[in-house]
Length: 90
Image (cartoon, rainbow, N blue to C red; front, top):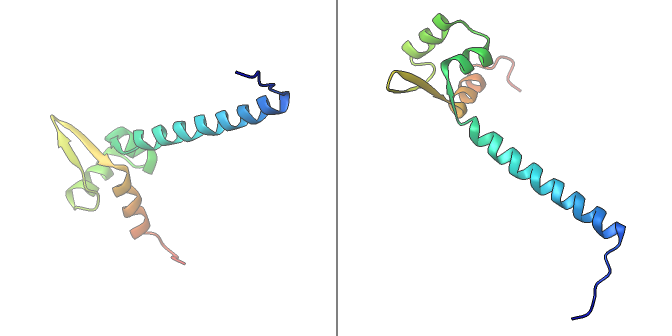
């Protein structure tokens, strides 16, 4: 088997490709972790009080799932509600 010479340019290209792959993996895992949010996360995200969040649940504005006393909100649903109520749509 013949020896193969690796140059510093080869290593640099490998490094760039490796960093890009790691970024892709990190972004995918970060997006998946945002799929379901708990009430405190939603309140912080929307800058609203607990009472306002409860009103959004009660009047059906914001869909939710309740499991064992813990309320979860789908990140995609929150984005949809924000887009639906967006003013000055272009």
